[in-house]
Length: 279
Ligand code: C2E
Ligand code: CA
Ligand code: CA
Ligand code: CA
Image 1: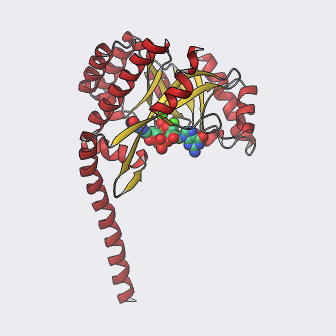
Image 2: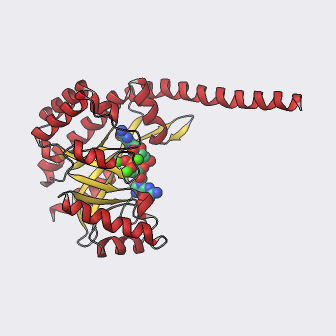
Image 3: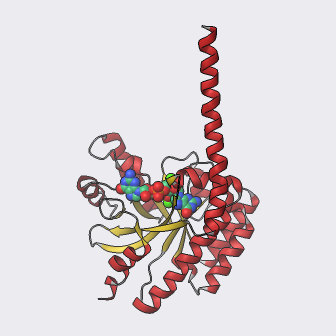
């Protein structure tokens, strides 16, 4: 028994070591790939299901490492956040998207808003907002074309700094969306702290449509609730016809999900959604 415990201990130890060394490896590789542009971005449309019009789009980070393979943003965003690389990553993301948006506006008269994910750490950093506002000016982007998506995976600390930055955004006309709505710890609190323009109903609720009548009535309440607060609404992770129909019938017609469109690379997004809007 003693021997077994010894082996188990070694097993856990080596698992932990493996995990830690992967983390350190990822941290170093991410810093390198950010410089060499090994990190890139996908664009997922938000579409009005009833009219099939494009309403806006969300930009999502992608990283395909030469030896580690594709790494989920769920893994590398957290590491970027802890290692300070999130500022650089978000800078690259905004620079690419803004430059595309400027070109799309000139060439195709395209003027749909972009949604950008921001972490709680970034929200508290004035240097992030200074860089963000600089980029807006450099690319001549209207602040109303930008929506910041705030997730509630971790509790948003309403520090003085964060609140001041949010006020700055509001004054400029930058929009705020609550991401993953319904899963966070403090969703009702953040609705009263921040000037929220949009609520994104988390995929967890959407995928229970047709399966769980309680979740279905929660969705209906979120719809009522968003009308009362004068917030726009998006359903995330809509994967089936049944989900799309239920949502549209119950007052939520803007959908983002595989049923209508998966995240696309910039070129594919441009060909399918930008060039087309001209005609
Ligand atoms: P999120 O902000 O909730 O983004 C939506 C996620 O759902 C994306 O995953 C998207 O690919 C996926 N998705 C879209 N439609 C469907 C669907 O119909 N079914 C399913 N099962 N999934 C769908 P992705 O790209 O893997 O990103 C995961 C999370 O990583 C994001 O969740 C976001 O929290 C974070 N993330 C991604 N890129 C960035 C970034 O540039 N900055 C920050 N701060 N976070 C990012
Ligand atoms: Ca998001
Ligand atoms: Ca989400
Ligand atoms: Ca999320």
